[in-house]
Image 1 (cartoon, helix red, strand yellow):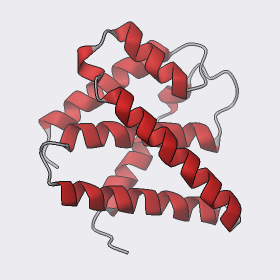
Image 2 (tube, helix red, strand yellow):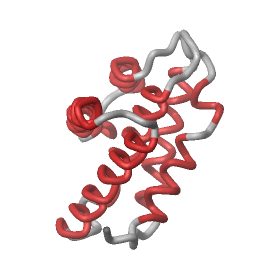
Image 3 (cartoon, rainbow, N blue to C red):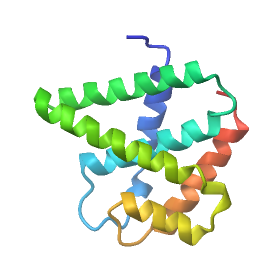
Length: 145
């Protein structure tokens, strides 16, 4: 496995661990909640670098990212059947997010909130999360790959 994208993956995992993101959850955050935030970070990452990087590079990052997720699920002790089901679910969620985030800069904050509520099990703090991902996208766009 090509390890040249490990820093990208580890940085996204680190961003996902920000405790402020989990304030206001209806229940205690779970592995799935953290996966959703990881997928959101990756979605915005791809959006920011879509035009700056070659399709080949982004495909390599994508492949590496989802291979690492699969490894993490395997390390959690799940069997092959459960892993395949979970990976299919996470990939479907990811593509749904990618579709929604594509229009992120053209929509109002209330629409952004609605998009995030579809993925995140949260009572409040949604405006903070929306602003967080808007700032995150702007940060990524200003920086090189």
